[in-house]
Length: 135
Image (cartoon, rainbow, N blue to C red; front, side, top):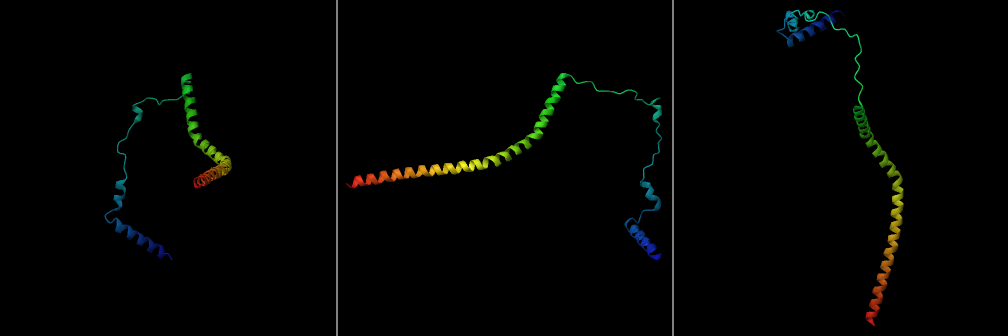
């Protein structure tokens, strides 16, 4: 059983050697960068800077506050407007569709009555004229 892992490792080593035949063991480390020059930053400054106080930004003036408020309003409106438009459209479709359909049905009924009256009048007039002409 111990020969199987050794055999597997030797096969893996052979496969690796096939893909990188020229690589020697020392060549592996040649690709790693090495720091050759020592840099001393302490020579430039004698003491490191110390932060001993809080630095607060200056308070905005009235004009900056108004500009910021306008910017916030504009960005909120730009973000909310599509949602508001969608809600209005959905509500109108829900509430107006039945109303429009009912009005359309009423209008169609009225137009049918008007058309029948016009057709009846036209037919009556045509028949009367034809009867007068035949006399």
